[in-house]
Length: 269
Image 1 (spheres, helix red, strand yellow):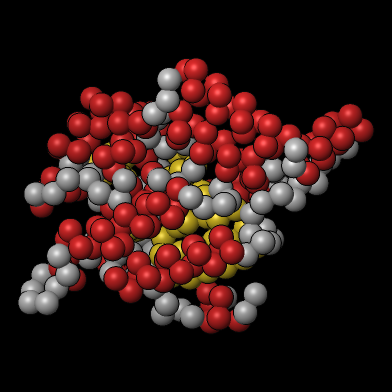
Image 2 (cartoon, rainbow, N blue to C red):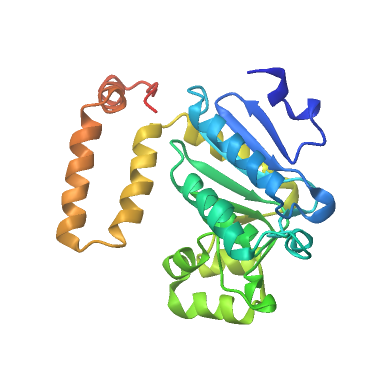
């Protein structure tokens, strides 16, 4: 890993990157603006995700925010005034590719939501595979407050996570949802005391990194795909994936380790 990837050497970068074992932590780093998105931060985040995807030693990614916020969505100062990019252009050129990139990562992605996650920032977190949130964190579908609809995958994610009634309630009212409420609603995986968040996120990521990565990613893909399939088609997709995975190293290793009563060593990615 080159020195440029170490976060303490680039404190002013809009995105910080740090490795710990097989876990790469990517931190949104505009704390003075609650890590709200600029074009520069979009480009840095997408580059960091692409580098993680291309690095064989990375087996799980943690996404979090610096300071007291996770991400407050779009920095509105960047879309006001002459020459500013149009909102539609920002969605097409940045938010859509980002949402797809997160969903297509070849390793699990854990969101550690350390503070407010609003607008596209909320949906960026919700698009990750597992979402952990500090008790002080909150989720806000803020779009209705400025006359927009949920983006960064929000219209697709919300009803799948919490059903149509809750999705519309969150989107139409733009009310703040506490981390505890988000957990109770099924919007996120876990809620915990602030002081425990990053330790828990790193522990979960390390656990996932030691598991069969290819199978975990295939599980994400199968569950997402099944939302559009009837039962017969979903069963067929399960069979296709099982045939593919059972021919890979990690299945052979998992079975051998089980029979030998030893810990498996997974390596597929």
